[in-house]
Length: 460
Image (cartoon, rainbow, N blue to C red; front, side, top):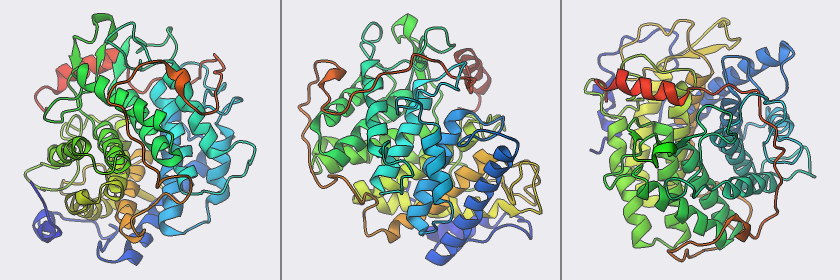
């Protein structure tokens, strides 16, 4: 179902909003930038609170895991590009460089407990955003593009055909909980990384890998013909046992990657059909009867069970769909309407604060579709990132149709349709992993995922 901005008064008629709620005019670029600036400032204040307590550069304090810091800096790279506000440039660049690891591949030694493929690729996607947007680099010897290529090469070398006919495992190391799980966030990030590298570099090998990752997700039953993208499957059962939970950010990775492939293949009918399928399926993430057209996280939000990680997911989703409108302009009417409705709701569920417990001057609620008289002091980094993602996503309309300002993004590549061989086929610099695990604790385990399925069946 298509929701236009004309439905906004109906969607908000029942809200009793706080006097401190942030007001957003989606018709005004200045208003969008002002709200984005407020939200970005809250994120940086949260970060400064962490580093003031002797935290290492690039990381936020507990309970925020390493991957979410990577997502935050990706959002801030996009923030600077979309708003031209450069006040945080040095801080963002320092964070991305400090966490890159000794081999420029985000195999970061100070992450000593676990480091998942999805965590690593989140940072690799952030440096790819920096490369695409020509973000200033404080360390010329470690180029943004090369870091992202190193991440890709390590992950391509981990492509595992011993179970499920291929795919990447969730965890990198055998001793980590989740190693025997092949999840769509890991494989979706890899698909998106490959597609964007193909677009940026003009190297068709990346496009071939993107096609391989997409096709595997379908063959494993994790991506259905009606564009459900399920969480993952148990590798020890050859992916015959599927976890049917769906997440916005995972869906967004496949939508955005498909839009890039549509662009890369000169609007091929196959990729256009796939993009259209994803776009039409976005309705399932914005279907609350009380507030149609407003994004929510169906797997956990209605039951108020979203954990720290999941509170950020809508931000990643918003970034993906906003950038997808540039790669596949025919999607813009529906996707921008979804962003407009959701951005106004998100802003209305954020409040300025004298100083919240997390050090921020702004707090947000994750329940954008619900009546809210006060956000209170509970909103954290994830809620801020989700609000920022959906608000600043509106600014892609101001970019003249292109956020990629470097590289060979006008080149085209034509995947063969069949893929053979190993990761060594890349015509890119190679990388050697450190073999050192990280100290990150996994956001939610396979055991937790299975348990959550049982608990949420009444919601799904």
